[in-house]
Amino acid sequence: MDLFEAADLPVVRSSSVDYKATIDDPRVSEVRILRPQEIPTYVAEGLFDVGITGRDWVEETASDVVTLGELRYSKATALPIRVVVAVAGDSDVQRIEDLPHGLRVSTEYPELTRRFFESKGITPDIRLSYGASEAKIPDIADCIVDITETGRALRAAGLRIIGEIMQSYTEVVANKASYDDPAKRHAMGQLMTLLNGTLDARGKVLVKLNVAADQFDAVLAVLPSAKSPTVSQLAGGGFAVEAVVEKRTINTLIPGLKDAGATDILELPISKIVP
Image (cartoon, rainbow, N blue to C red):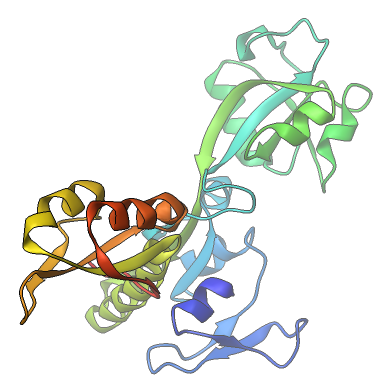
């Protein structure tokens, strides 16, 4: 919701429990708030043109959809989530290949888990989990297949990761027939431009400064830029310089620019970056 708001595509609904919503944009006719587990199937069936879900759920449901791109953000880090296999920390099992036939696996991903273990020549006894999978070892399950970003929660539960099935980002997917429609495909591309431009701008700021000609090279040596900085001549001599930089570097960058001879330094927020 924050991403769409920042992309000037605010999602409006009457309350936080209303599953129907609107976006005041001529390219969007209807919005529905649904669970990510269900979205790939509904998009593949043509109930919706576009959906936002995780690659993990696309693979779990084996949905035949077109990917429009990843939205690279997550709950704790900028890393993807990982679908992993974990066992008790004191287990003798060190590798996936050490697991026996018929092992009890607790997971929210039964189909993804079945395909993975069968590709390893192992026939598992899969128990569908509705959450708290880590609490089911060792009494209810021999191992779990679960998601993690950092592995911290699994370690805190006394578990050890022995394998990774896949990595997953949030993904925008489209119905194949809708994507084949030129008008709809164009609209999808325009929406992705807004979303990706907003994501690219996160954590970045625009720095503007003036510098005398004899200090220009020294200032440029300090100034990082996403590409080449924009440089223009000032009427009274010297140059005006603009560059996009990482916000996390600004505390050392601005003093460094001033030391190198920059003046009239401005730091400005950026809403979108569209290449």
